[in-house]
Amino acid sequence: MRIIKEKHKDDISVKGLIRAAAAGALAVSLSLSSMPIFAMASPRFARTEEEWASLEDNVLNFEEIADLVEEYNATVRQNEEDYSKDERKTMDAQDVREMMIKQADEYDQMAVNMEGTSQSSAAQYRMQANSIRSQADDNVTDYTVLRLSYDRMRDEIVQSAKTYFFDYYQSLEEQKKAFTAYESAKLAYDSAVNRFNVGLATQIDVMTADEALKSAQAATITADTAAANSKRLLQVTCGWNYASEPEIGPLPEMDLTKIASIDLPADTEQAINYSYTIRTDQRMLANTISSNNYVSLREKYQDQIENDTDQVRNSVRTAYDTLVNSKTAYDNAVTARELSEGSAAAAERNFSLGQLSNTEYQSALKSLETARYDEEIARIAVMSAWTSYESVINGLASAGTTAG
Image 1 (cartoon, rainbow, N blue to C red):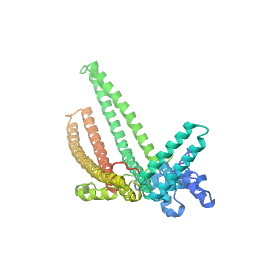
Image 2: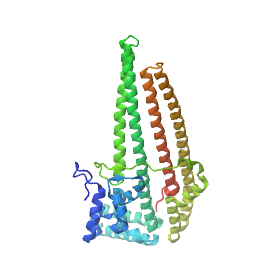
Image 3: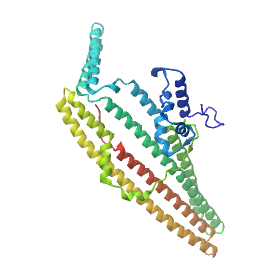
Image 4: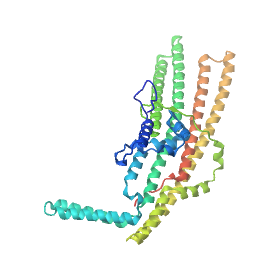
């Protein structure tokens, strides 16, 4: 069992627990019902030793997120456990209907058994039986619908983890930006005090600068907390214990110039073809053929496909607009940073000539630091938006919720 840090000997990541349980499963045959959820991670032979080594180390890399979530995310593992126990996972829609009718018959029998003891309980059992029969008549769920549902939940968690990854790096930049703002406020406060001491500022000026300094200091604490929380959310989603201290890998490499060459119509069609929601709708529509309510259900799911297709198109457009707008914001941030570099260079020249005070010069340098942080924050926002856009065209476009 892997210990992450010497100073935290009991701080073992969920990843370590899963792999240990899986290793134990190779030596001892246990039934699924008696095994802990952590043993549901893939068997050792499912990946190469190099792949396992990468997943089992204490580094959380962006390109590993999908595999980390699949192997170690608690919700995904629980979902797979639930799926493994779901009787419907091998049933077609008619099999599911028959199973539900059998359950309804059992409730009817329970009602008969309760008639001499409790009429209210007997009535309740009959209501449950009638409800289940009604659901059975409308059922269009089968093994494919069930699998698509679990796969979608997994991919949504993967996308959330990727978003958390970018949020973490943005929070680090916000953290540095907040500290720079604090330093600028400290310079302004010291200047106000010095000017007050020589009669060039009032007590109100000093008090105002002091309030600004306190506010900036509070902002640094808020930024520190946000950065810590972002990391915890990321690591827990990827399978680490909340108290662990994994190393977060670098930001991925992305060529942002390729955004301009996106083929929106082609991507929209891909989003429709890959959409979990629409694929589920189509499967449900196909399953209506064996239902007693074939006519009404077929009309229902034909309308559902049409509505969900429109929603997918809108989802793609929204994600695309968000991406393009974030790229524009980044381009503006680049321009602002370049202008700030020019201002800082001019301030340096004027300071060397004695035409600018040290406070004014330091202020110009702090403004440049802030502009650089803003540029990086904007760049990360583009990367996050692009990743979100890709998830939309690869199956996760927002659309109506389907239910069998």
